[in-house]
Length: 110
Image (tube, rainbow, N blue to C red; front, side):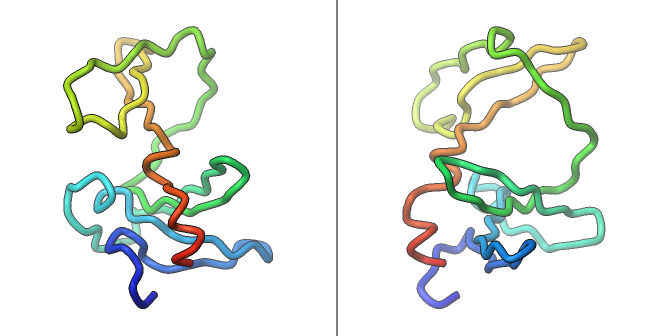
């Protein structure tokens, strides 16, 4: 898409809904994703808007009670996308701040 941010990979049509596709790796400043068969697009709803998020893989999905979210460490701007940490089954899982990953400008660029 001309003049779009580098992390915006394009748009998809999912059952009649046109939505932008965001390269999560690129959005987080970790380089560009070179799509392979293991990569998937996860559909995310944020503030009544839909987007596809290109991720490396999905191993499982689960529901987490809100009270199990622990505050993210305050280390400044470097972790601005991190909203909370989920501690479950001896694992620490990052809970991303989707408002920042999927900013308002995306809908105008798409």
